[in-house]
Image 1 (tube, rainbow, N blue to C red):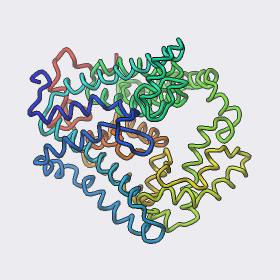
Image 2 (cartoon, rainbow, N blue to C red):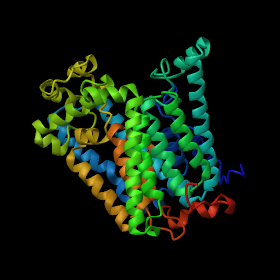
Image 3 (cartoon, one colour):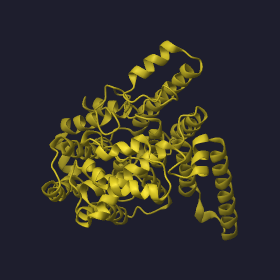
Image 4 (tube, rainbow, N blue to C red):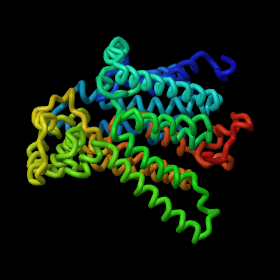
Length: 448
């Protein structure tokens, strides 16, 4: 316990939450829209155990802690004019509160109690290496036809993708990029810990090599560009060198994209046949976003103020006729999954797009308020630099295909940019500089 720098026993709960970050696809997790996480519950428990420190968190993150009240007020209009589904509304608000618990836990553990960041990173790295090892075992069980092991993995997962490809411990393979580039990569930018710098590319390229999915291929290309923006010493380059480097980087990106499309059957099919005919999974995801948005365009009042928390299914059903007509007009194919959304149950409605879910439930005004508050926080704390810009753009991209309000990537960014810039660390707050807690031989000034 001393080696972990534990202040009291409640800190074991925080370390357990960090250790279980990659575990969001098992049957034992909290059942939430399309993922089964464990860590959000532990973050909430950690906050409860350290409730006396909440006022100090509130002083720094006051707006975010009171934001659920805004969401509740905005939902009243949708509940009064559309419908009120208590259980689904509760699920939405619980997800938001669990996200805030993640934010509060990070602040309590790392800023207030000053747990050593090296210990936190050690637990984080070990956890994700274990998740990667599980993926390798899944891949071996598939290719070597180890039926007993393969059956055990299939029974272990809540949503079974491991029947055909490794999904590690995630709810589905498309979430790999959310973890690698929404959690681990920003953790590297914050700490410059070489262990994370080794883990992220190994995990990404291993997932691609094992055929875990198509999205990880695209996510890796986007994250590579983000790393180039964040880590390149732009001020040291002369203008001519900068132009040559930019042209070379664009050429490399184009070649890598062409190779990715040419070698990945699903990406190649999308390129040849289009978004609506190339891949059934992709078209279904797009349709899940299109339906509620067209419902809002057909009803401007609910576009601005939302259909109410828990009413995503209502928005999908109202928008289905418009979305299906839109797809047919563009010669797209209506798959069975897309057609089933005409009568989608409220308990199984999900958009796979954070922006669509926010607008559908709480309205466009809330989404704009979120963006303004985020930009204002970064500006107020003077956090604008290459890393922040790259991180923010990467988050904006990742959440285009992910909707969980409680997921850690957004709340990690809020925590990291929530306080004034430290002179020794580009992103971490003055009184929570991880470089102070790390041995000198662990400090690195770049991704080498």
